Image (cartoon, rainbow, N blue to C red; front, side):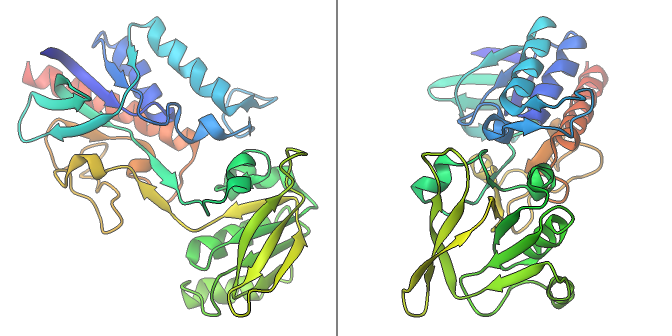
Length: 308
């Protein structure tokens, strides 16, 4: 059985930063990359809001640089996914396929996956005008017309934020009624840049051949009528799914599955720490995830020192 002082689960900004700090502390961390190596940045094109890159940087390049930095200090990266975990006592047990790993401490940095519409054209245009993060990508669509899909508080917040850049923001919602709180809905309705299309769903995003969004085909949920709406971007605001299912309920989470923090980067289990979007459902930025990874690694180092 393989034994490690620190095992990090997840290879986005949070996991990679945790690996840098743990490796520099001579803890020789093992990072399990997960099914989506690199996290959400691996499907992001230009990143212009990460400090230190005045000209911006491509998302995959940023996470690859973090990985190389961690490896330079002795971190080991391993492909694969943690299928199950036994966190009942330290050393904790993790299973990657048929391989079992024992860890004195565990840092959970598995992130949260955006909910997508699930249509082929949407998937092909992610990073080319299709986005799940207005804060990340809204700047690129200054003076353009954009669509926001969703009916909850997140959709209202994203749409309102996008009016800082876009010439027009159209909210597309499958129902007549909205799940958003009244205050958020009222705020969006008062914004002159926001328009509304209800009782409709997107069935296709154009234009895959051009590798850019030029519009979307909508279908009425009332009479099946279809029509096209021009747009330079489609922002999905239909929620995220935290990647915590593999924990089997051992780590305390809220009703949505996000890990509940017990101060700093600590979970309810002594020696198990969280980092990034798997706990953070408010900011969801590369820089906040990296900061959380730093915190988790320092917490793990101190935990090991205290118990040795």
